[in-house]
Length: 190
Image (cartoon, rainbow, N blue to C red; front, top):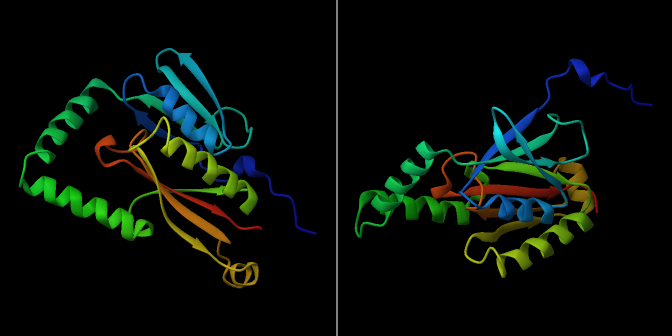
């Protein structure tokens, strides 16, 4: 029998902070709800209003994702960046297109975060929800991309997920919204 660990003294991921565009907190909540996460909105001085995404029902600040409206300084940078990307024939536009192509072709080599779902069934349910969003309220802003599947035997032999899919969205980002956010969804058990 495995010994129970006292996680209070372990290094654990406390939270990940994302940004969203003004007025798009509800879209971030739709996105994470499709992944089976519980979302709530908090307004807490001095931090202001933000979305709390609970991955597993842990106490606030443990294994959470926070999503806040991008600050004016980030929005100014985003606007300046987008205007330069849009210039026909610009180096920045070409580099941006090449980067986006790499995200399509080799998403595992692009910055991303991975989210493990409890089972392949739960992952397939999330994929169906995300697909509906990509054809509905997030058309053009959510893409289901590269996917991998393994047999249960192969997955266990290599300590790899049974199923993986990379998703891209520009609704949230831990960096610049202009380049979007890659999310790797995975399941280890059928």
